[in-house]
Length: 177
Image (cartoon, rainbow, N blue to C red):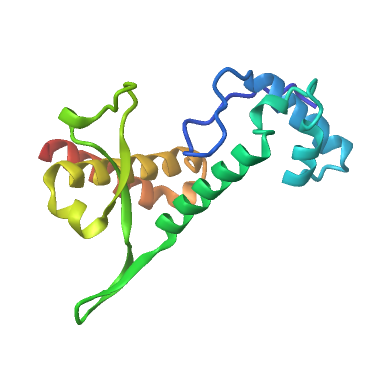
């Protein structure tokens, strides 16, 4: 088998901070675990293997249970905010349900907290779509996700027409701004 080279995928918004960790070391350890477990790798097996402090995976996880519980509840809250949708506004049913909330960044003049961290929050989608600055953020994020999907599946020629439509939309959006 050929040697594989591992890198981190561009941010997926996950709860694990991989910065400072060598993706090659982590990828090789995950491959070792997969092979060790009959080519089947599951999250419980990864956590179990990461428990020893000498494991190359150990520092990817939070081992203080109270902090881990808090982080898990925050992740659950993010999930609830992402999966709640609007199916009807007033008497008008939505053809496609609309996410109730979208994740946005504070306006440029208010972007950072006292520690210099960018302030992100969830805004009501109908409110965000009426605000030009927030709407542009939402559309940009959606288009970035679409381009990411396109890059993941660009080898599938069956999606050629979809890719052409994405490229046309990108051209339209760029000329509109």
